[in-house]
Image 1 (cartoon, chains in turn purple, green):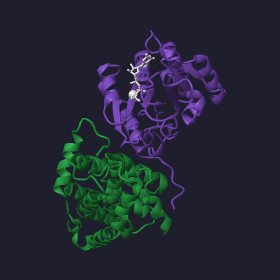
Image 2 (cartoon, chains in turn orange, purple):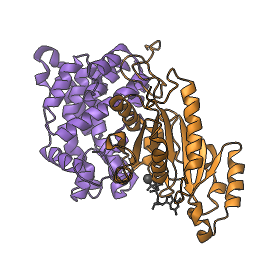
Image 3 (cartoon, chains in turn green, cyan):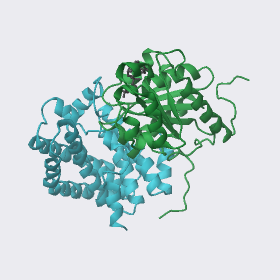
Image 4 (cartoon, helix red, strand yellow):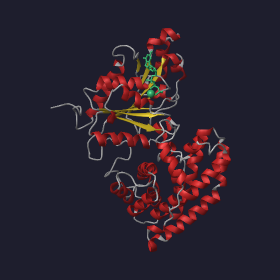
Length: 237
Length: 224
Ligand SMILES: Nc1nc2c(ncn2[C@@H]2O[C@H](COP(=O)(O)OP(=O)(O)OP(=O)(O)O)[C@@H](O)[C@H]2O)c(=O)[nH]1
Ligand SMILES: [Mg+2]
């Protein structure tokens, strides 16, 4: 019944590219990956790198605490009103994939409260290799693994490894200490992912997040090209 | 009317945000009040006949076409704990999003416009049930069952309870759920003549108190 209806009026239903007032919403990038691989560290570094040029906000999905949100607040990577923590009821992948309603509400609420934003980063709670974001929640997604959990992880594959728009292999500084072979990881990842990009990072070094930041900047350019608002929301005339 | 619409709306996979809520059982588990399937059964039965009945009647009244704004006020009056009000509105917003996608119609759009902060979840549930072509009794069943299914699922995660045992708890509660749904639908049938005040206002003070405490915990698995 009522199949002729379109979703206008109050509030978008899902991943509509426009906000209720007709303006294009922020680009939403999801960051997923196993526990402790460096998702929050990547989010923090991205915020530091991009916050002067772009209007940013972050949604964290902590499993049991507000650990990630609190870390970002402590590190003061963004003002507190730009960071929202979503509770996931013991099931982080459900909240980013099967039932995204709480996360959608969080990203929409950030834009409603803060005005137009360029970019919202959604960090998933640390999960397993099958956890990926719904396209209803994010426009593009990064899967973060690290060298110290075993250099065979890219070979094992799984939806995160094979389909994420960017695969980040983090903590390369630890590779010599844990006997991880970065060349093998790179060739396994390439075999699993075809043409999809892979970035190797070490966030302990200066500007270690650069490869990821460059990729995000490309995504932002593409996103802005599809909009009536080509300038960054923060740009002053 | 499609019977299957009822299964869609009541199914545990309907993406309306419930999975992040324990229906109070996380607090009860922490207090050692729920620790096995017998205590889970007692908890669910108590919640069903109190908060569940109240919610089921509100849902039935909304599904019968009574003014959702009046019912939302009635829901507020029956929800003294601020934490539970906030949860009910949050879940109401999330359910509305899913329902608007599943059964788009003017009544759901109007609800979104009139109460942008969210209506109480049972009220949205009733309007959604109506949009799906379901009856007041159907809406009452979904609300009542939701009040026991949520805690049962959460208990499996919190206690490592045998999922077969938890499902058996739900099966044993079927007659109770039916009875509560009938009572709720009866009350909803009297709203036209007697006003929303006729709807049951059963509540469980302990659930209210522990919900407030739970909302202040620094570490928890569930949002409520
Ligand atoms: N040596 C080294 N340590 C890192 C690097 N990136 C992150 N870490 C450390 O790894 C630990 C986990 O990093 P987080 O960013 O919290 O990982 P996460 O993926 O957000 O973890 P969860 O949210 O719990 O799943 C922290 O102690 C970081 O300081 C890196 O490139 N090299
Ligand atoms: Mg983290």
